Image (cartoon, rainbow, N blue to C red; front, top):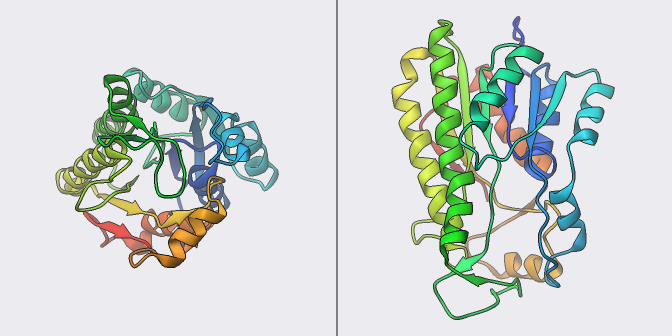
Length: 271
């Protein structure tokens, strides 16, 4: 994985059937890491403001991701898992260990993204449909973006300690900011919880040789970016780039490399 390692590594990457997750799985596999591609087929309701290709990618399986990795000589297996199920974490680790080996890299990329709001607005600044905060929107978001990463980190830590491992990497994905995430309030809040879990892991697991960091990607074109979104980025004082998933994956690959051994307990904001 760009660092000249003499041992094999195994990663679990969640939400890896498309976008940043798929790009991360491919990038890690290209460097010699075995990858369990965790995914869940999400079937969104049609939204005129979101390209149909994005809905199709979220609803896709991970067969093509795994096939491409294997065709390039890499190792990968796909597991569909609903991360709202508390038993999913152990099942992913069991499968990875049986098929690829002990897991020493965890990338919490999956999101239960819903666009909810406290306001009475029905659309955001780029025309995407919003809905009010409800128990359902909160539960979906927090189950996937907060509970699942916490359980996955816990599973990682227990197994890592039990086998006496001394090298490990955890990377989470976040969004939002100091003022939360207006127009995507449950998404931002759940990501903040995941960030806190990951920062705690950086401290608590340091003695086990584990680093833990969070990546805050820029606006990333995973299929949802429209001309209106690009115009918004160009006029924004806080956004700079519309990135590709592969660009974000390169940063994640660095964080899980030996070269980043001193990088832990950080939120890396990419612009």
